[in-house]
Length: 140
Figure (tube, rainbow, N blue to C red):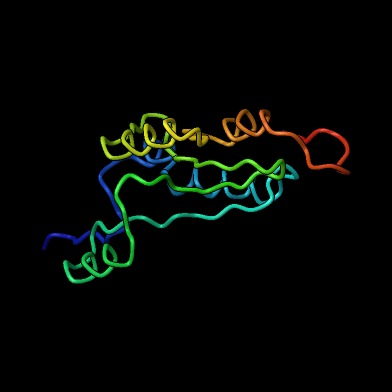
């Protein structure tokens, strides 16, 4: 009798699975850094995925404002500026819709960053000032 695999089992060796973090893992790391940064006034995730959902649910989400290509995070910096962050893994690439959104932001002078790790978040944050009254540099 053939043994059935559960949905958590895969043919890929554990060592291979551990090499590349998933986009969700990267986004959780980014969110943790943003939530503790003195340079961030507010940020939120933009859950903009309809894949794997029923056609009825997809239609409902689109009618509620779901739009393909919008970045993963909106960040309102403490210096009063704001922008979007698209989270990707090391090998992840922007889709055509994401490139269109990136261009739309650039045309309007809105910051748009692609971040692949927590290190990238610190690089983006470096371009923003600490709010008045906050002393010292942030730790990386």
